[in-house]
Structure formats: C-alpha cells, structure tokens
Image (tube, rainbow, N blue to C red; front, side):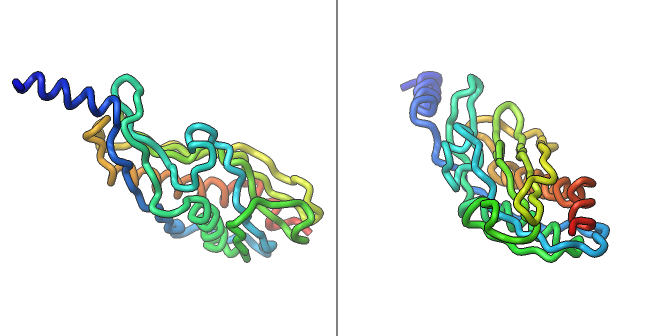
Length: 209
C-alpha cells in the first residue's frame, strides 16, 4: 500500500474505533495566603448531585473529559484514575480548612435535609471535564448550595471556572494528556477558590447561628 493510502486507512480506522482512553490524576493543593474567616461555623461538605448528563456518560464516576477530532467526533475518553467526586468534595473541604473553617466531608452521598444539625454545603455538578478539540480546555461548573441548621437553603448560586491551555495543545490523536491533566487540576483549584471565598457563603459561615 502506498503511503497516502496507508494514512487514509489509518485515519479512517481512528474515526471509527477511536483511541484508547486517556488517564489523568486529580490533585488539589490549597492556595497560600488566604484570609481566615473569623469565628467560623463548622460546615459539613457533602457529595454533589451529578448533573453532567452525556458529558459524564450519565454518572460515570471516572469520566472527566474527551479527545475529539476535527469534525467533533470523539476519539477517546479522558478518565480519572479514581472516582472524581471524593477528590472534588475533599478539595472544597481543604479549601475551607485553609481559611480556618472546621470541616467534615461526607463524600458518599449528597445532603439530605435533617441529616445534620449544622451548616452543610452541597449542590448540582453540571460540568467537570477536560477536553482536547482545536485547543485544550477544562471546565467545572456547579449550582452550589449552603444549607442552614434547619436544612433550608441560605445561599444558592452558580459558580463556574474555565481554563484554556497556554501551551497551544494538539487536537485528536496528538492530544497531550499531561496538559489535559494540568488544566483540569488548575480549573479545580480556581473553582474551589471561588467557592471558599464567595462573599455570601463567607458571610453566612462567619455569621450564622
């Protein structure tokens, strides 16, 4: 087979079968120099409801993105090396701890009103992905809810963070998995920072009784 014919066959096979799944490791480090919340109330962080839909293969605990070809065809999935939700909620917990908030993390299920007596934080996770298309990007977004001691919602807002690669990136079979991992972890750090420094949540944690 001549060389042009070989490459045409190779690309055709990729379009039909895709590539092997890409694996990434999720890591979170609390930011340094964050201000402390005075007289912080204890908060219990629960798992979020997984509302990612098709992006997360309707609840796959390992699916965190994809690699796509020039026509939007998926070539491979990006999978975390372990279920991502515990990492996600523990990251939020670590972010609050860095601000002096007493935190308990319950990562095996979302909040049910009446299950605890104090403040609780949970929500609906809408996006948690890292993708290689024409460029590499990562996106985390969620409806975040802070519940009061009686189980009522006292803060509810959508928080979203997106990180685009500053390294150019390469789409399709040439996607750089290490870059996809890097920007997803960067998006996680930015998202957590937004949550734990949100002024409305801050006010309730420092002033709720």
